[in-house]
Amino acid sequence: MTDYGHDLRFGTFITPQNRDPEAPVALARLSEQVGLDLVTFQDHPYQPAFLDTWTLLSWVAARTERIHLAANVHSLPMRPPAVLARSAASLDLLSGGRYDMALGAGGFWDAIAAMGGDRRSPGEAVQAVSEAVDIMRAIWDPAERGGLPLSRRARR
Image (cartoon, rainbow, N blue to C red; front, side, top):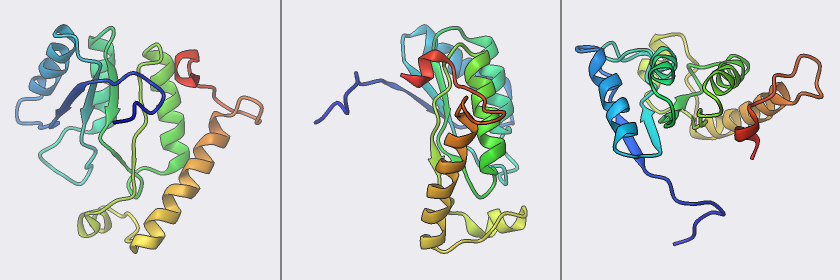
């Protein structure tokens, strides 16, 4: 199996349940303590049993020191690309380069539409990801007016 040009990293996929809001945080901290590289949380804003992913990622970043953080994956129909780019850059800078981006085209269309997101065909969803990546890269470009650079670690 290829290494994609970097070392393999291992992590956890933690359900961001809100029944016991400290439980996902404790699991993230444990993931760091046992030496894992990454902790991820589902991003389903329409799921009433889940904590908000951005809030949870920020909270976990503040409660850990080394482990990388990511959504698994950010739902683009629910996260406007420009806002997502700004949020990602901010969390990356504040966490010392520990935020990793993962994007999703969407899939639970009834739930997405019920929360005001666009219902997309498979082709439209793929196109939206491509457009989102272009928008996000432009926002992160420090040469652009108002560009917000990522941390040095994230640019590698």
